[in-house]
Image (cartoon, rainbow, N blue to C red; front, top):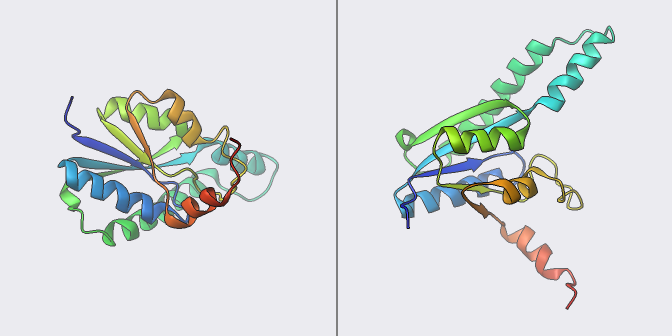
Length: 164
């Protein structure tokens, strides 16, 4: 079996992101792996801003992208600082595009061995799991996918009635 040298942690920067990162960091530490921390700005959101701008509203698409990137960099820095994982063993990427496509591209370009992600991203809609980025990555990833569950989410899943 090939040694796990690089772990990609996909952060949607929702409420589970610190837990997802901490879990990935503990995996990386235990395996002696480096981490790539990625966040994807969905091009659907960027296009929506451009449409609003084209309608005559005073919205600058480029300013939107730079302000979102700045905000996400700050959020990621806060998550990283709360961890003891060595900064020199991490690389941070913020990309714009289709989240699933961008994550698959990062896996290939960075020669990632494993991806860690949560079951949900920026929204907390339990009913919108089918068709989500996590679901698509599970089906299409060429590397091992680890899905993080925090205690609260795991408890919710345990409480559900499951058909026999």
